[in-house]
Image (cartoon, rainbow, N blue to C red; front, side, top):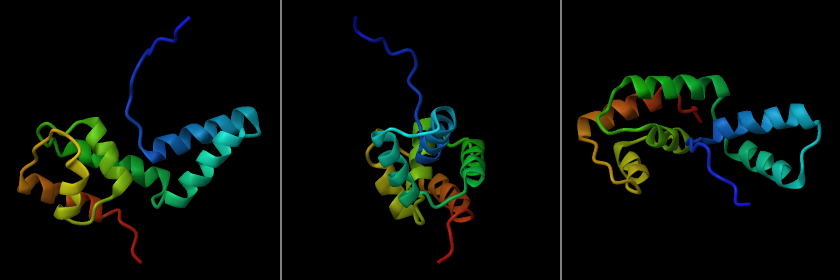
Length: 116
């Protein structure tokens, strides 16, 4: 019997962290693969979960034409700090965003970037 794909939903690393936390609560002990995933996530997560959710909401409210959920999730994963970095992030998609909208996206992302 071949498994069927029920639903495909894009996730960012913060969504994945939330799911790993649920698994940890449910099973009390993580499998080796899940533990490695959690270790990886902890090394790359820079925002608090609440901040990541708020950032996602703000980016979606911008109503940038053709910018879909999957693009927003990737922007949250990478947190580009400039228009040039954003161009690199979106380069992997067949998506064209004008400079004005890119600047709007960056202005929202910059509010959430950690200060060094």
